Image (tube, rainbow over the protein chains, first blue to last red):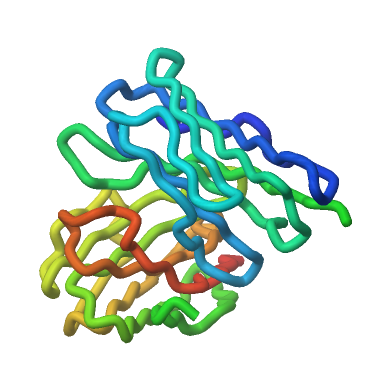
Length: 112
Length: 115
């Protein structure tokens, strides 16, 4: 049973518009959430994170929102750029372990 | 370039072959990890090594055998694999396995195909 779910395998957005990537989780013990970005032929790289004590964290064009009651988080990219085209993984951790639990990823394509 | 290198980048092997994946980190980290990413599945943690000792084996079949001879090198020895083991195998390292998780640095992965 997947504890972290990214239900949209792909997303296409026009350059300059907002990209919204969604992630749902089931384990209420998760207290730290991360987004990783992966280009083809490269490993995932850390993008942004949020602790469960916050509901928003912003870093430049990237903002992560956390809705604990809905067990949902989202990554907003605005404005989207063609270089943002990549696979975005949501990950969560917490409870008894620091193990990262990943979602399946969403492929974002930003069209020029 | 994340400071974590993996070789080979691509590997095709038969079910009776023995091969090894290599990972090297140049970051002075103390912990190293093997992850598996199958098509349309999440990244799955396989093994964690801290200071060259295995601290986690995530119910991985014995046909996968990790080795960590020192804190900079990590191997994954493969023996009598199955076609369903075809996947991207990612190595990562971090300063401390109990530390902040975003400080895991990933290598580019080895794309493995088992025929």
